[in-house]
Image (cartoon, rainbow, N blue to C red; front, side):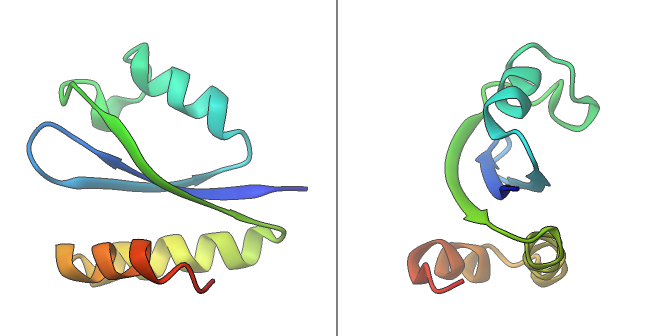
Length: 83
């Protein structure tokens, strides 16, 4: 089973980081205003995603990126593509 960690750019200049099993469906939910945390932050733009084979690894990366919180770390992660 595939898991995805994805990063959205939202209108206030911040990043939204999450993980999901169905990336296409989740992005549609964001676009249809069905996700509470991005509902009032249009426009959104998918700027990065990474596929993982294990939920444990995807959730760990998601947690790590959220914990770091600094824009520079998130941007370095998107450039590294090491995971």
